Image (cartoon, rainbow, N blue to C red; front, side):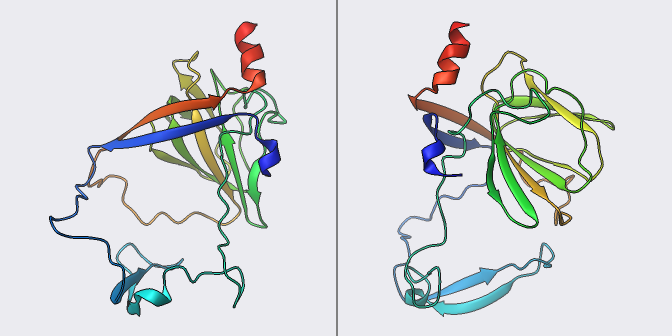
Length: 219
């Protein structure tokens, strides 16, 4: 996806309630030099596996590059919810959205569903992980229905029929980030043992409303 494909411009403020207290102790400031401890997790690690290495701060910060000896960052920042051209999920071709990124094993897309998706469907080549960013929804599958709110993650295994409906159906707030992987997802947590039951409140500021949204609103 390129920046020339933006159709709108919105920014979001995300506030978490009910989570851990990450307030820094009084007098504690950010580390700006000296030695730091780097904790690393790798693909096949379990939840308690990590590698700890003592590093020099100056060898970590501001030195990442695209290639050896080339300064800069490989990270691109995209406005993931600003490229829609219609309400997504109303037809088989998924008009209205596109892939933000594609590789041999992964595809990432965003959705702005409203009301019920066009039909139950299932993937035979990828597993699906969905992050609910804004709005409430009912995730439906052939085994159970689950209500989700901002910040919650759901996984659809390979071959399982599923669909979704926004709550309430007429609500326009639904925004979701989806990952489709040809490699099976490994979930290193026990979903019955949450440490916190937190919620995310999303405040949206619309800087530019999409033309297709304006036409939809006026009928």
